[in-house]
Image 1 (cartoon, rainbow over the protein chains, first blue to last red):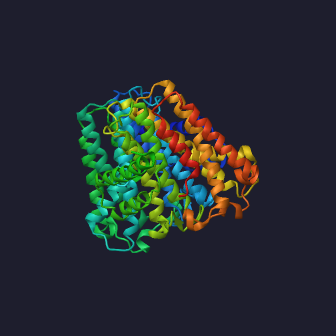
Image 2: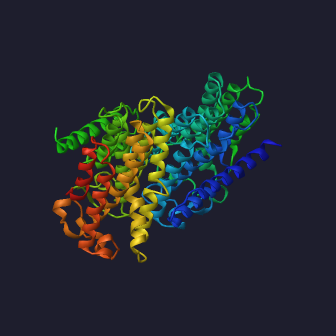
Image 3: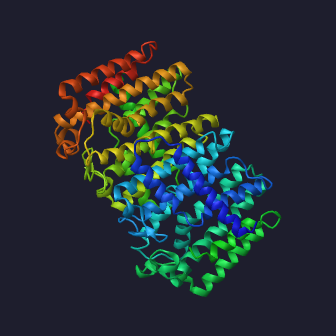
Length: 295
Length: 295
């Protein structure tokens, strides 16, 4: 199977796993459940899930560990919650997401707030459930890593800094810090959690962290490049929003050529980190994919 | 020490513990950290923390287990997050909370959304951290119980149903189901998590669940009674809001006398459940306190 096909398969498997996890949730709050499913089903390429699964299979010597798909689903739930809340009128005020109405447009603002809230909760519930791994130490570690990556010192803190970037000038260090929290932390966490659920040894874990750290930064630089070059029809959301708001970005502070060069160099470094593992081809493919993607 | 004094002490200890947990969080997102502290420091009587600590001490034969205070802090963080989000303009649109400006008034709406988000995350981070308990199985179980109580089938789902109660008639079963999810689940979870961190045996755990199930329902009936009787100056938030919106409540569907009678009977039942444990006096006090509180 080609890596492209593997990525498509992983996205489909993860979407199916998320649906199954909702089937397990008995609740009379059916509108909330529907809005959560809506927010998770328009999942794009599911890069974070693919990173979990790729790292887990690498750690498991080619065999996918039992709970890896649940971990992938949990990462995608956290990512989906962040998109639902980021799109709210009080935040980025985006009416569309990947070409579809945002959650608060398809439902309403209150429902979207609760959908994001409950998606976050469900991610932790899934990780802590014994079905994810038979060792409680692994489950608790997965929760801890995901919480650290997505909270005050990670994704949520990064979104706060991103909002502040509209009110004061950010230099390149500020941008890098903000982006490493807002986007990088969860991408790195995806690879790390894949390693954890797959039982990676310390050497592989260190390599996965270095790999995904470079990848996360390159991913965000590529996103900035896309924002300058892209058009709404291609990427499915309004473009140049950040530029129009006068916010600094990698591209505005580095220039297009330097930004492109840096992203390529980071991906080369990321791939080189995994070169001692001959089975790391899928992760290397994901790294390259992350900077050429168009949706 | 009187039970009143114990309750005050537990509230102060929990507030201090929450502050300390923020000291451990290194983040450049200082405005977000401030707003989260703001939202957790106006904590009222901290009934949920007291239930955690009371149940944990009962399970620990009078000695407070090491991580019990961290568990109490986590429960209060979840409660605080729910209040911050419930107060948002798109939800209950409340400008004050316990006599102080709501988080989105003191800061702004985007910050309040993120503060709630990151408080939820921090609660799970605290529970999953090895400092909470040296057995990973206990930590994973705490995360699982808190997630189940606060997500789609618990608190968030209950808030969704509460919003729907404004658009369609709710009968007494609907109200009870909604309230048991919205408020009862977290109150019950507080007692259960206290039992878990204190190493309660199955008999005590069953009793704690029965006790806190009755308590949670009585608490909400008392809240409805307060809403009909109270005045804004006493309880620190706008009153009769629910009644003004034409929403059903325990009081509107049962009448004042029947509601008061039911709440009292539930508290008697709750206390009776714990009668085999002579050291359960504090929990019995908390049950009585929960229906006579004024703030």
